Image (cartoon, rainbow, N blue to C red; front, side):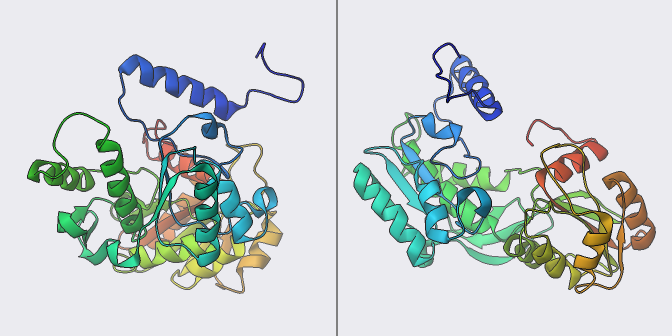
Length: 331
């Protein structure tokens, strides 16, 4: 802090980053993956001299902070690239790809766009996840429920291959390398992301806060939904709460709206406004003051054979982790 001028400050995210990097050094970590927060160009993570940048689907997120157009948001995301580094992206809209390519060209970085034909392909669901085709790795079992994880897994495997080229160990072209990748995908966990918390009734939690992510959640779980379906929704007022209400309203017998006090910077519609906003998408709507109250109501409606969906901001996901006695270390 002694080196900061009056226009600079050490943010909470910066403190977390400093602790993480120190811990990585102490543990002798050879390769670390860091996820940026909002945006990227001005995120604390961008100070790390990374050799590889990876871009998952870029959509209209945080428009109040990043801008109201895809190309502007892509500009913020592109800021994580470093000179003479590598970058990979899943298929994006043309305007996003143009921004990413221009940033890479300006930095002398090697940018690679993964063609749709090289993306993993969905096969079917399993008891604990999904099966997909993934090029040289064949039919792969992915221990995650979300269909969108196919794109994430494809990107991760390609990124791992790039990093692996700079690390000692198993030969990249060997059968053992392929099996290690397959084993990793079959054993990966992502708590709070389309995660099943219990059976009878089945309870799932996910951090969807806009129409696109909520529709993807519905698509991912459509074969697993047992009637009646009760959705608990907690989306702040500055996010796409109507999009989430509409997506879940179509597949739910009822909606229970709630909020969380975990993060004081979040703001929610008051009960009357929230109910009015949700009723066009589902007539059976109620409001609960907390997640615990909402879950009690949902269990009464779902019985033992139904499905409860808990969907919204990461703070409500954290509330769910707490309620079910799960670890906070990954949230």
